[in-house]
Image (cartoon, rainbow, N blue to C red; front, side, top):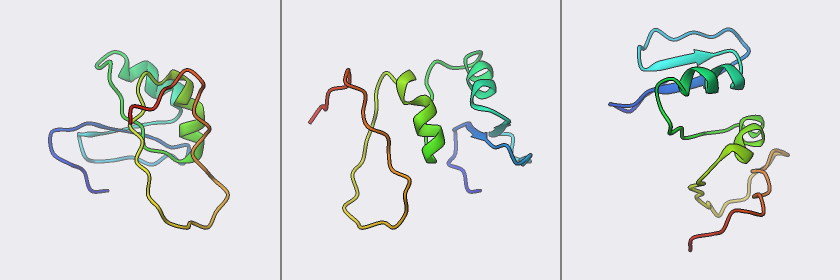
Length: 89
């Protein structure tokens, strides 16, 4: 996995993967990741999959959403935005 400098990455995987990169932290569950990350930061940026987005969208304070105008095959979509969110554009 390529990583950008000066950043820590948290990867959630049930597949038992590991990383030799000290900037990549691997967790077995979302709950475990949130518990451990809360000890070191109060900001987390989320990159999905669908299950990650669905599990965390209700915990979000801010969503930075980019729209890409392409036709994509597949049945996984970004979840519906919670009612309390307002678009800033």
